[in-house]
Image (tube, rainbow, N blue to C red; front, side):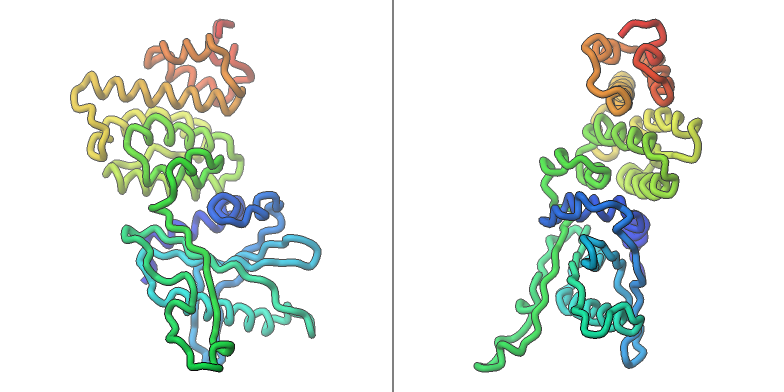
Length: 325
């Protein structure tokens, strides 16, 4: 049975933007960072062996690195440790090569393309399976060692990613991973405002929808309340701010220890202030000191008004409405 987290990640990584972010930001292979999105193509990940036994990999992408050079990226999503993952990856790679031949995608005499096998793991237990097939094979008798199979795969253990690295990684995946891993105050003050700003700035509706749905599921799982992210039109995007404030009040259940009413009001102001600051920086760059002071001293009503204006305003003057910064 397919785990719910698998479905969520498959929806995220159905977008070439996020596949590129994953490869460039969370693997050692930085060469993917400069590759155009048009060079990423998702291909069939269902193969049938010679015995008609149906096998499925989670996702396969073909990435064109240069003229005549393609790399196939096999993405496998795991919520639990699989002791024989290296065996499974070797099987998937063999079936992929076999499938390429059956579909006549290899010219006669042409060498097989390189493959990057990648396991994305978000389970609670630390990953303990061998990353190398040699780790699950018995030692071969003398003389047979050269004939034993070999296979390695790359592991991304999401729940054990370094927090400082996540903070310095400038892509939306880092924000989504931090949403799962960070403390409640950091989520309210930094991560959610940054995600809202990212959603506002992205014209691709399908990509925004996948990110918003995934983020809402994480928020609901952590807080027990519906997430604040919406995206269908500008009115709903503007309403995310109000949803965030309501949601922040309930954040105490996951560690936002502001039990009294005045504490909740303070938390709402902190969240709204961070949201306005993030939005305006994304639209107008570094903010001048007077603008920062106004945000810091703004009332709830002023901050709400500046956030709504900031979505479409042409300048900071238009945001603050009176020509002052």
